[in-house]
Image (spheres, rainbow, N blue to C red):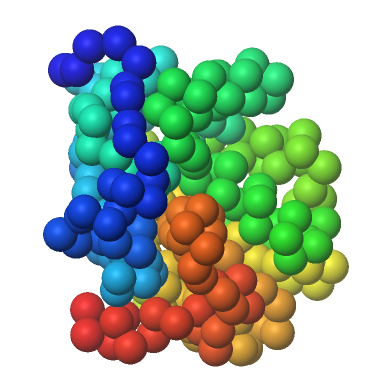
Length: 265
């Protein structure tokens, strides 16, 4: 593991000009240790001229609660794995670790992380919050693959931030332990989500970076007529926005342009 010395970086334009790959944007991303979805979806979502490198959040814990706590407590050490790579932004493709935190303390930690690394450090939870604000969304219907206790933490988090949760759909993948988010398919999520009562919601939030979401967004947003957001969609949008790329498209009123890449995946 890298040391805790402050990371030095040359100016972003100079570093980008000398890159072999990723001259439009280089992003360093952390994902939970067993997550098979976040990296593929982020690679599809990020513009082709951008590059992503990744590392894993790891924990010896056998239970989800312990792993999520370890990820949050050791986040700075995990970020240090990227050394002096010179990323334009860093992303944390994990949501569950950040729902129960004191908001003031977490914002202070986030500011310190960014100052030390001299680039934006964006968690998926922060990215969703930014997307809701940009779209002017004040109420959401939540689709959760989490165990029920984590679903409740998620709901409470958004309500503490002032977002009204009009309905919660608990997917069967997460009703009890073991946590089975990674076995979900897009077809199963669509089938379940179509049963969600979205009346009164200004957007649908598919939470969890380990749940496949891109084909779900493509199918649900035109059907429901409101934005359908996911943790991975919002994180990719937030990262792309740090280098001035990414805009709405036919796939999503938040962030489009990825349908062709998805069709090849």
